[in-house]
Image 1 (tube, one colour):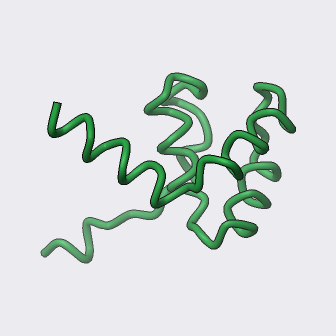
Image 2 (image 1 turned 135 degrees about the vertical axis):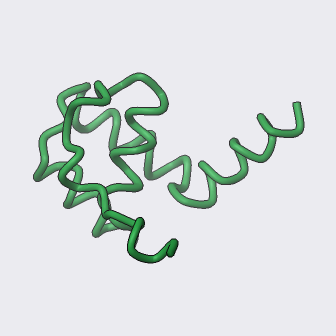
Length: 77
């Protein structure tokens, strides 16, 4: 329960619920690269954040739009 609450808080902080709901409604389940990039720019987030959210929620397969995710391995060393 604590982890679920933390996940929900993080999701809402990263992508505000009203904007996310409007985005989902606008694109109608078809998540093109351009649509994701434009939405991410509008909310001031990296496109990979949006891709990760869509994938985590099962709205986008884990094999799609991964090129929009930034590599962090260089920053972890």
